[in-house]
Image (cartoon, rainbow, N blue to C red; front, side, top):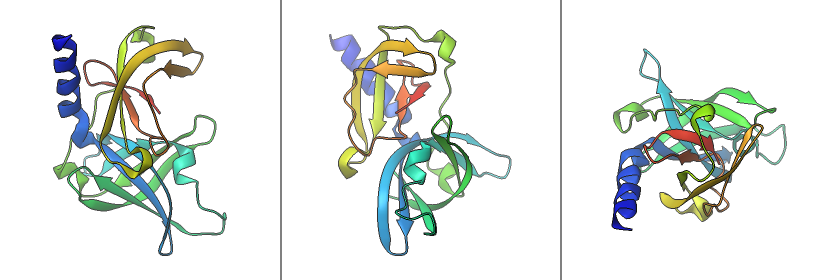
Amino acid sequence: GAQHRHRRAEVFQQVRQSVVTVQVVVGTDRQCSGSGAIIGQDAAGRSYVLTNRHVIDCAKRRSDKAVFEVLHDSGARFAAELDFRSVQHDLALLAVDGIGEFSRPVSLRPRAELHVGESVYALGSPLRLRGTFTSGIISALRQDRLQTDAAIGPGSSGGPLFDRHGMLCGVI
């Protein structure tokens, strides 16, 4: 009811500044885009964005020199560089300078604390629409996967899945 709607709005307001659009550009051609979440900042003030490896590896040819850009909800655009990628887990970490003044890192929730039936919220950039927010539940917990019925579209890859406290509990 009204309490659940209020909680959804609170979660959205809490996390929206920490979710970004990730774009991969080769030359002047934007190859693809996805989503990501700011998960940390180092002592030098550099922020780190967690996304999917397949988002950053989408250049048409391996010889292409890809450039990564991060678009913040405010409209600010930042250059990013690849810090880490895992083919096995389909995850990547981008390092971004300057975005820290616009946002703060999200908190992480351990998988062991998640339960089937719990409310979750997906925030991303499906179909180039920034800041799209959908809700659902955890419908299954598999070995290294979380299954949800939250509506998720193309472009949301790499985006965060949040619990009812605004803690990151999965990557779309």
